[in-house]
Length: 80
Image 1: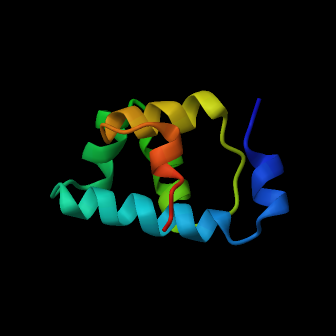
Image 2: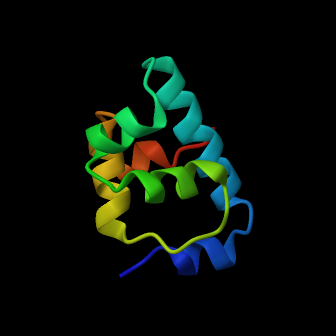
Image 3: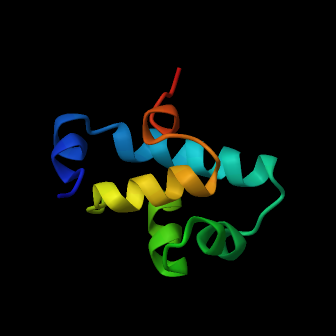
């Protein structure tokens, strides 16, 4: 299952997630490649997610990214 349905319903979600990923990565002093390794996702995919370009993302990938940043998927998607 992917979160592309959420992206379709909330067109600003990719941009918000992109900003969140970049902020989390920069807070930790990581390069994109290091963040991708830490999150156990392919580097090119991580680049896409951080670029804000709408792209399908599996829920399992969202979970791996959240875990890589020591948080839950819900916390990762909390943009407030």
